[in-house]
Image 1 (tube, helix red, strand yellow):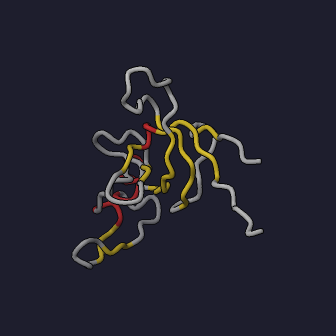
Image 2 (cartoon, rainbow, N blue to C red):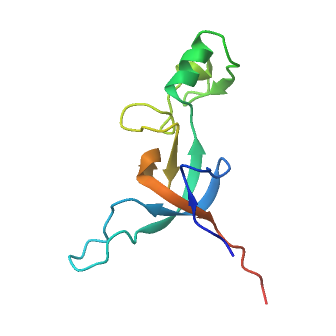
Length: 119
């Protein structure tokens, strides 16, 4: 049986879909229970501000990545939604099917999605 894992203890593998608990997001009805908002989301790892600075200084490896215009740039020069920056307080974020996403700190627990067997 799958168990809930705190984001303070462990994070999913990069680009993995999980069942996630969203902090303080009510369904919308005034009589709904609190803290019952769950979604299937994909975990996407970014980089921290510290990692960005260390890459810029050449103290840790800095991969070259292709960005929107398909040119290659050092990773420290490229900012993605998953990076620790602005309103995103963590070096990762969570994306839904479609264009939506959640900041890293908006999810507190997650679990692997169980595999269903064909019977």
